[in-house]
Image 1 (cartoon, rainbow, N blue to C red):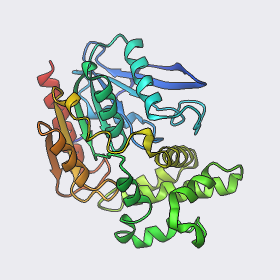
Image 2: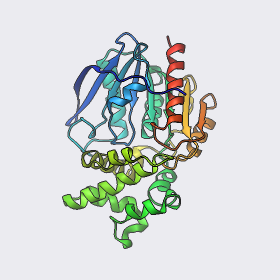
Image 3: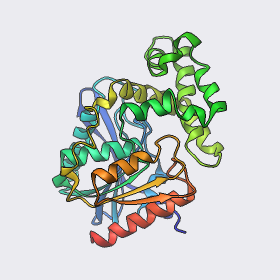
Image 4: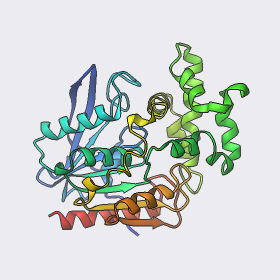
Length: 316
């Protein structure tokens, strides 16, 4: 079974002014003459970490990471202003042009798979491949499953902690109730809602309990950006038209696609991966039998490393 590549240092780190008051953090590592690959983190609002560099062979890849608007090291922190899917696609294009890249491989999981697909459908000429994990189509049913009615039946104990932040009379629409608190001026209410929202996701992300992941999701700096930005996107249907990704498969037909999805993914159920493969039959789907949603479960890591190694050979 494959494991992550050894730790490496970044070659350069910088901030890119993308306009509208936002500065996004960008870094490069690996081989400057290697295959360009853009790591697209989840959330929205999750941010990147040095561990994300380790999915790629540093001798083969020019590894590019960035923190999306409002999260990670990007500024202003947890900002919702001018923070939309279309703005993030534009930011990716600014990064590509700034770095002088013609075509690149996109590697995205969860919300990162959503953003990768929307970018590829918008700019297919600049994408030489997609490696996608934990497919999230951002349909109303997908959002409702995790934040209102679905995963609650699998994790009823964790669910009780999640809804504790919301009075019973508002629980018929938890997304709206959380959004009101996450955008309020009351700092205590805002942080309580952020922690409840983020910890719920962290607890449900792995097949086996992982206290380190839950602790990361509970960190106040991380939780505030994650919860605020996710709620902002989801209450606005991710700024996509209904079923936008599945109804626009033609632009993906010339792009090699590898999908890795955990059989027991409770955050983004596997039906979404099957729906994407049905829309794009050339996509190669790997179902990991002993994994949930997290990118850091052994079976998921194994499949993702096999995928990046395959693309390193095929794109060389």
